[in-house]
Length: 449
Image (tube, rainbow, N blue to C red; front, side, top):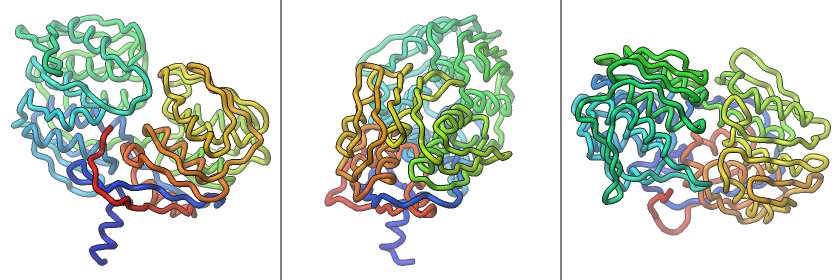
């Protein structure tokens, strides 16, 4: 393979070293049905907390089914720059040894790129009884305070301060298990308290805990390393502190949001697609809405087959914490609702400003009205290609789906957001028959998230 071809393949597979990438656009020629089968990658939202959890272990861990997305690249770079030994064993597996991890040295330039960097707080506090981490970044679609995280840390015995843009935690006498009630369901706070409490003295009980599959995956990983965690997947999680952990080999669960995105893309283009390497139960809420719209969804042991609707019907969607309809899937449904008969509504129950993408969809012919956390979509029309820009990860996925279903050419900027969470999206779509290209823009720029 030529150097030019190899470089293009790396760009399209999103192998972006050191967090830098030539600015790009996606160019989509719409109107092609997606047909065939697609294999889903590991879940980014499960891999990230597990990667940070290796800090607690201090021995080599081998993680498999790691997705090739930019958030993973940034996380591995953070760990490596903090003294961890990081070895890529294959495209989807990595070995991490945090024996020589240097607490409190997280590079702010990397930390600010993603929300998951908050997990450094729980991991450092759990192992070293102190933590120092810069304020996190990530997609901007609403306020995501960390007050529930801090409430949990303080209940375990930590004292918190903030200075020079850093969050500092200290528990000089060590952490002691307590009963903690979250005022609201929070995935991030649940993860962080699980990390902090794993090596704490005594028993920690998290009440009103998040129930997402990636919470269960984190608990399973920690238990494989010698932790004692029960109740993950329910609203009450019990953590019995242990004195030490050991390394293990662990496989990350498949990404339910990537699976749902391909399911909606198939429905929007009127194609038949088999979505493989998934856990069908994790996408039940997506399956239910697609079936309500008239789309055919057949569940297999580790796959679903999506077949086109005779006529798409309108539906109403309300996002809720798992096992409710996921907030990370509502933008992808928006273009599908515009192709359905009648009027559909989306009520956003998690983030208050997640509808910013609607303005971009209007450029493609979408008729929609937004009022705070509610949006109304008028169906029965058609989508037409236009220049649009992604402003966050799932909004970018919505624009890709709209472009696939639209008449004509769609140019999508803000590709760096999409690359945060979708592994080889362009290659997978092409294999299904999509006409999509990656086009370089004139200058290099740092990914800002």
